[in-house]
Image: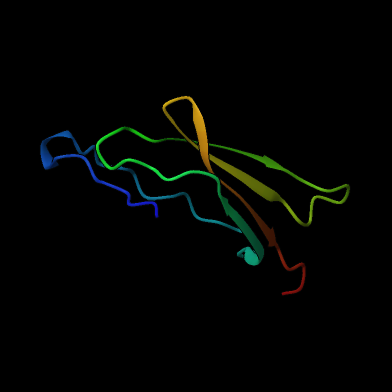
Amino acid sequence: MVLPRSRPPSRHRPHPPPPPTTTHPTHPTTLHATFHHYTEHHTPTYITTHTTTNDNNQTPTTHITAHQNNTTVFTAQLTTHTPTHT
């Protein structure tokens, strides 16, 4: 189980609003997740991501990996699709 934890209010940084978008929203099409190891609640868990795309750039896949104590505890792949119709 992954439980995100927010920072104390004094450490929150305001985020500017996102820029207006002229593209269509993306839609999740597949999600694959694997839990490799139990995580400890008192130890930090570091999450890294990177995105790859297929040849026509229509189906990007985001790869998510969680590490704790130099061990991979969680991996996931989220594939999305951006419709081209209006």
